[in-house]
Image (cartoon, rainbow, N blue to C red; front, side, top):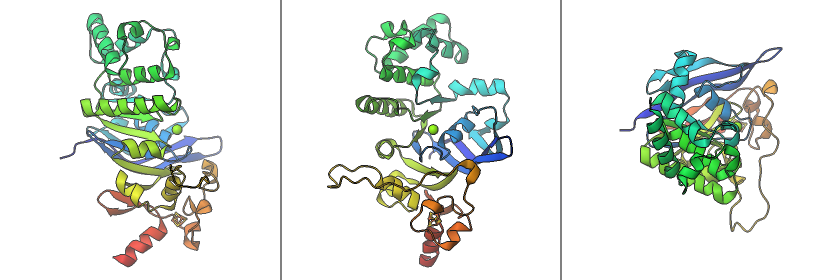
Length: 328
Ligand code: SF4
Ligand code: MG
């Protein structure tokens, strides 16, 4: 039986501006099971990061959750006060970001930053925390852990600092790890190593991982299930093999077609025309209609619903729903 570690129900997140509130994420629902990697994909501006920041309650000041629930081991963390939420961050749910340097404190040695976390959450003594920190540095594949323990962040390479971020994120045994574009800032060989490390750590501690990325290659490599977002909405979700073999939503089809294929014999890179609309200028009907080659009149008038097609599969597209009705 799969255990749901994180469940997001009907999440809507808005941002206050001078004139009005803008909806960045609308009625988003998904879950992450134990031992599972769920990919959240879409171009920038699709609402992936706002979703993860909402889950962690780390939204900027003008952002707020207007609707929904975020259940962590069945407790709605949206009801918690700031102190409780701080306790949960790190100990129950942890996050790694794109730029590890911006998450590390430049004036504190790496080892001490690692110790802080377990002294706070696991109530380690200084001695225990030091031993644990060195062990974690070793676990993330760094060969001279004592040496790295005593370094300042600027003395680490990009790949090494992302390894340290992973060590820090996992040092208090969280149940869920959110990784937001964890390898985007790294060069290709290091990317692969960091992704392998995340997989390895997941297998070791059986956590659930929410992996946010715009890179479908990474999704194919690492994820069990995928959620595709566009303009703050889920437009398709499926098991990873289904999604790649038979993408249903025109946006997903475009994303997959944009992945360069080795040996495809073509040096033309198909891409999705146009760009993600601005939050303040959302189309009325299907948010993808201005960019969609298959759009029909209805698409410009009525927003399609997210339809559950089978157990693991959802799609938000008039054409897909109509095809489904005809075949039913
Ligand atoms: Fe394209 Fe219409 Fe489907 Fe939107 S609803 S993705 S515009 S076909
Ligand atoms: Mg982002």
